[in-house]
Image (cartoon, rainbow, N blue to C red; front, side, top):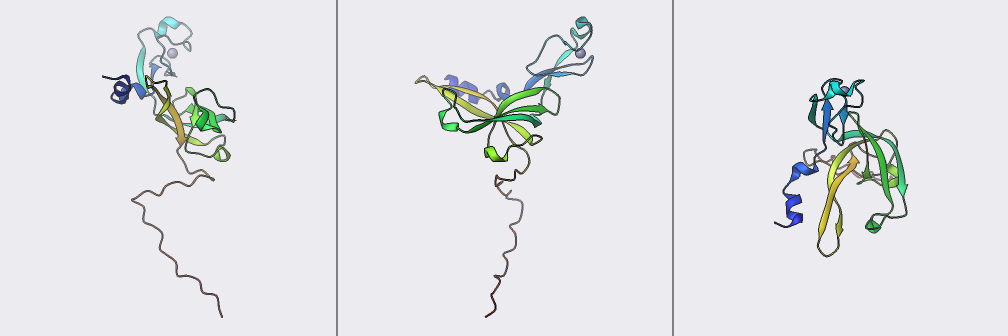
Length: 161
Ligand SMILES: [Zn+2]
């Protein structure tokens, strides 16, 4: 099986699998085996359980990147944001599907798994999470859901002669 296919067929790998301390209920991403929040770390030993982050959160701060990193040339300008997930951990990631003018602190976003880059001729594809707006942004048209009826066409307003 090729590496690319391995990744495609292993969706669990894309998930935001963190860990949670059942002693103090703090959530960690990436997962930790010991809880630094607990005064005595030993309290948390064997109290850490796998925890799946919802991927939902809001923008804490952001920066618009105009100088691309190697391998990201096509994406400039792009938005990098610090996102506080609803479960607590703060993640850094690119915000996609939004114009840089549409980003703002407090914007609700949701993690989405995307191809990050492809390396060389071997075609090693890196996947990771990015964030997409979870609410309508002012400057980004949001595709109408098919379930939502289209607005009634209005009678054209006729100018009086
Ligand atoms: Zn703890």
